Image: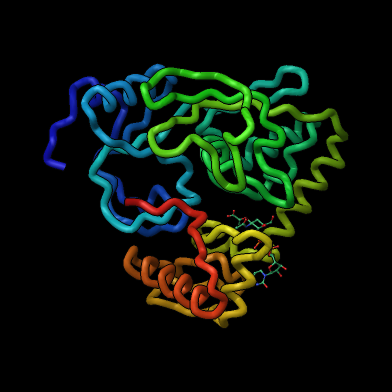
Length: 294
Ligand code: EPU
């Protein structure tokens, strides 16, 4: 981008030219020209307001665990770096959006609060979980969500309870431009040992069916209604299919893994091949579950 950024933005904590391989779990992608890392809600608000005023598009990055980056990003990228602390009030637990999602599930367990065990294997930040309405084993975030706080498209801070239609399967209305700031979940009193056992069981289940030791971005495609994307890709015989260092995981076909040196182009080609094959064989158009930039 040739355009100069306003001083107001440049005064915020930021870095330049950070490779996306260091910002995403998949480890592919190009260069992040501008990475803004506010440490307070006020700084995040200054960022959004300045971008809105200058008509400057921007993107919001969380833990980078559900993201496939296929090139350089020249527009400002926002990544929150709020102080990492959980707040408990009775049966409610609140986390800032930059808090680790798995850490939050573990925090709930160690407080003896039940209801968040499903989340114990879902990587990324709580902000990413809110944005995607993350879920596993039949439970999703909106089921336990009490209130959430975000910056709207005008850079105003809003705090509210979820309304019907605002959260669906792997989707929330907090799409491009919105910035999740924090949320509070409502949990139930439980036995520490029982909750910890469920957390361990969920992590174990995931570890045994998903290639967690390889660089990955979680499930790449959404499950079509009543179907499993992983099973469809598997039935096309694509497990182990490889483009360069990018491969359809032999363990779980809806995971594409990076063997170390995969490029963005290789990933794009692999994703296209998988979609085309599933479309040919089953007549089903798979939709990405991951975000794809640019
Ligand atoms: N299957 C195959 N071959 C494969 C993969 C799966 O035949 O290569 C079959 C399994 O045997 C099973 C069925 O497909 O009968 C479903 O598989 P699994 O239980 O692994 O669940 P999934 O539908 O593939 C979903 C979520 C996961 C989440 C698990 C556990 C989506 C797209 N995926 O996977 O979420 O961890 O359930 O709850 O909704 C993610 O969001 O990134 C993610 C990985």
